[in-house]
Image 1 (tube, helix red, strand yellow):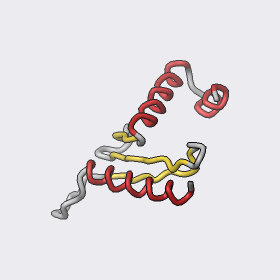
Image 2 (cartoon, helix red, strand yellow):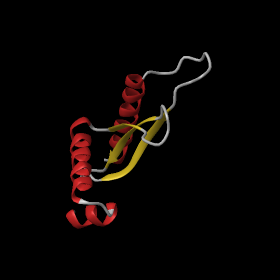
Image 3 (cartoon, one colour):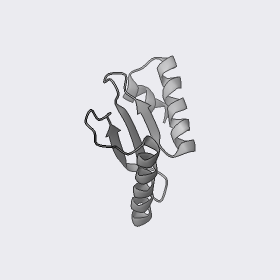
Image 4 (cartoon, one colour):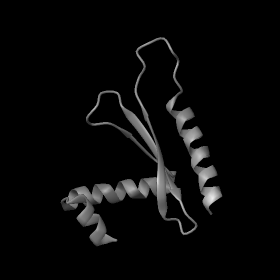
Length: 95
């Protein structure tokens, strides 16, 4: 796995350490959630879809941008809960 991480990232040791921490956090929480460094206000949450051997075979991702009209949008917590439920349902079907 070490070689694959290094080859995939083409990164220095600090970036690889940060990537490992992110992977650890995903393993603990079951998802990744980030604030974009490129787009103002963009927040994204992703859940891996795991097979019977706990290998990621797909992912569900929802990008969220603040609305500028009067329409009320779902909260981050609501989106995370809904996406978690959808990922669990998919995993259940493929396991």
